[in-house]
Length: 295
Image 1: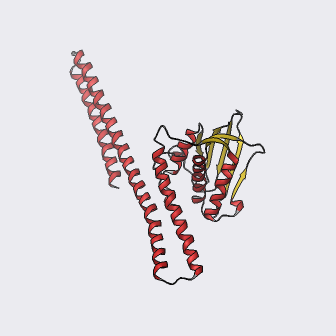
Image 2: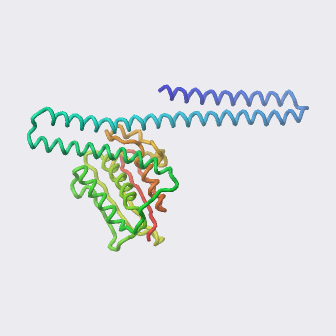
Image 3: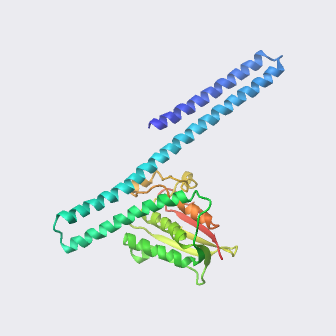
C-alpha cells in the first residue's frame, strides 16, 4: 500500500510539473516574441525538463514494481524453503522421541521424501534462474526423441500428484521427431509447464499434450492445454518475466517462486525455439505453445 501511494505521488508530481513547464513555456513565448534565440533556447530547455521529469517518473515506477517483485520472490522462496524444513524436522523429532508403528513410520518417510523433493525443486529453480543469465554454459547436447522426453515428464507428474492415467493425455505422431538438445534442461522445462498445469487446475485437472510437425517441415510444435484458472490478456506477455506471479495464483493456494516460466523461456530459446501462452480469459484454461527445430 505504501509503495502504491508512492507511485501515485510521483505520477501526480510528474504530471503537475509537466503542466507547469508547458505553462511557463507558453508564457515566455508570449512575453519574448522578439527574442528569437532565447525563445528557441527556452523551448529546448523546457522540452528537456519535461522529458527528464517523464523519464524520472517512469524509472521510479519501474523500480517500485521491481522491488515489489523482489520482495514477493524473497517471501515465496523463504516460505518454500522454511515449510519443508520445518515439516521434516517435526517428523524426525516424532520418530526419535516416540514409539511409532511401522505403518506410521513408512507414512512419515513418504511425507519427508515429498518435502525433501519440494525443497530440492526450489533450490534447483533458483540455481537455474541464475544460470539463465549466463551467456555460456556447458550443455550435454544429443539427439532426443521429444515424445519420449515429454512422456517421461508426464509420468513423473502423475506420480508426484498421484494422478489417474487419463488426467494427462498425450497425442504424438507415429514417426519419431528428433531434436538436438540437453535432455535434463528440456525435462526441466516440460516439468515446469506440466507442474503449473496441475497446480492451477483445481481438484479436477484435465491436461492434453499434442506434438506435431509445423507447416515449415523443419520444426515441431508442442501444445500443452489445461482447464485451469486461465490468464488475463494483460498478463500473457508478463508471465515469462522473472519473479512474476499471477494475481489469481494466491487464490488457488498454489505456491511458487515466480521463476518457473522464466526458466522455461530461457531453456526453449537456448535450444533455438520459441514459447508463447494463450488463454480465453480468467477461469477458461491456458495453452502453452512451444516450437523447436528438428534435427
